Image (cartoon, rainbow, N blue to C red; front, side, top):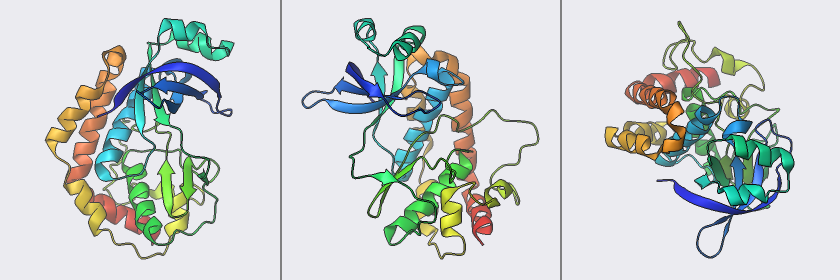
Length: 261
């Protein structure tokens, strides 16, 4: 479900993101693949953060949410030894040996600009992403940090290591009235602002959630690499949350529609 690649070349750091992503060249037959990689040691919650990237990618794939192709990256010690960036090499040495990566998108994609109005198929895609972020509790699709690229009417989203935060006592479920009040704040989510007051056909989005099967969720757990075993509990909790959302998806959509009204 998610391929494992072997990095062979460190190209450069990618901006100044808090997780210190880097661009790597990875083996995948011929041609090779350019991958944006995150290390466990660069994330606040280590392998748990990477596991949230994985479960989010698996769910996105099954729902038709557009993300760059995800990979697991096997970091060979010989490769780490030739990384020219001392900080990144140090983080790689202290990590678990497996990183998370996403295929680098073509340069024709550009960052989402605040104030953009979705048109055509972008409208349904944006609505599906808004619901997706609401139910995985992703706080990181804000106007100041959209984590979203566009090319024409195509959208790609990324960065989900903050999804499925630890459950706190009394935190409302996303199908409960008022659970998504935080999304009503301007700038809190790029697509809430872009879709507010717009007509959206929610039926295909509902159908994609209702079509998720327990067999698919069983397959999710098999993807978690043994090197990330410390994240197993959080990974299972995320899957349980997804199952609960599926069973209450009509209420989740109703709450999102309220936020957009």
